[in-house]
Length: 269
Length: 306
Image 1: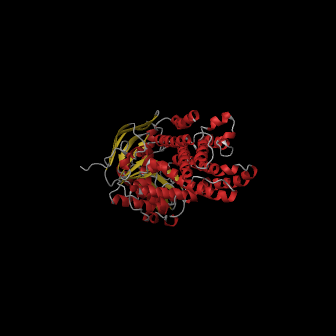
Image 2: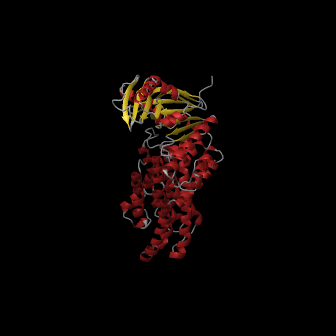
Image 3: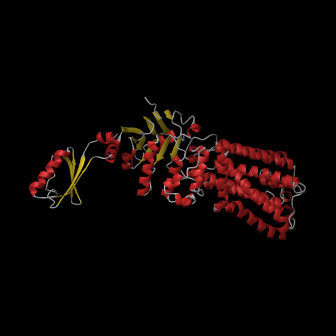
């Protein structure tokens, strides 16, 4: 336990003193929040109702998808994991510590956005804070799980960027972060159900913001919970210590299993 | 008889079609410093990585402190310390944090004294990426020994280090030995291996071509002694005497006559006689026994013909 806490505190500090991590954890999401708050609320007043869930979801996506996978791939390529293995650092710690430290950074960013947005931009605040926190934790769980999984299976830094963008860019376009889900064309609405961002916005709206959801918010909660569970499970199973070692457990295509909850949501919700 | 702390029996490792290590066997006693020598691709790192539990042998039996590294790697990590050839740390970790971090996983009190000992006292709060290559290697060494392991694996430990740090590191390795720690040293530095090792094994194309103490290994070679002579009048230079007794090879370099002799006594006596006959006097005379490096080169050349 002492080792895990030492590992956690070192990793948390890294998230602040490493420039790239600081950018991904704080500067990018908070900068985007300020820009969107200043511009979008002026040109699209209805955006005030979705500013907090939209930008909290954006922060979770950006910090996890753009911040977690590459350090994992780099650490494996540089032999840091080999060093960890010899010294008894378990794979569970290697994957859970960055996940937990990212969650702590995200909680700080989430509080900064949700507390300041009503005052700065006249944004609609959560009507149920407890549900807001629960949905936030589930969104973070699902997105961090997918990010860790990308870091585990990605063979190189370049592939990591590609894999992360496959989720991040569509989330920005059709995930309901900037344009409400209900305003999307029918085909895009269906496709959007494959994205954690869509379920995040739906669950926030239906359970925490006092708005009408586009579909069952509890269905979204279940999709996010299982999405995170399967992603973390796969990440642990497919974890490889060494990029040079040809022997690894499972086939990289098993990663597609992480889509199962989202596919189920697409057909059932 | 004392049970060896490391046992390697008919160990073989194949990558695809390439046989990296071919049925090698050796054993090490506690407190021994064992040098693993060989050119690039000889199988040194593969052997070490299998002993460390990082790779699984294709066949054969490996035991480190009574534990099979491939089936029980989890039991090994408190018993061994490893300085990997390609090991690294997160960019932003400081030496102090690294010691704290690894000692926590080994469940021992952090040994910050090692940082001072290895010349990293002033850098204890610097981030890993800002350390020089030599400082990074010293930190990796400190991490390998911080938990007082029974066996230490050092892969090219002094590559890129300055002379003073090398000396300090050699002293540290001798201290480890005096405490009963077994050290396996994979290195390209023959002088280092000869100076530190109780025994060395030379690997060529995955096979052990010779094993023994540095003295035993050098004694089994062609045994040519190098005699370098410089005189005031240069009477031994070309045409002076290239046909001395027991000399198999003769060359001239920087005003020195250099002889490779199979019999030191006969050649030296002839040199002194020659000087007296020419009325010349000696400026410098050096007699060098064959080194481990000479024997290594000899074996490498022989190995190419295999």
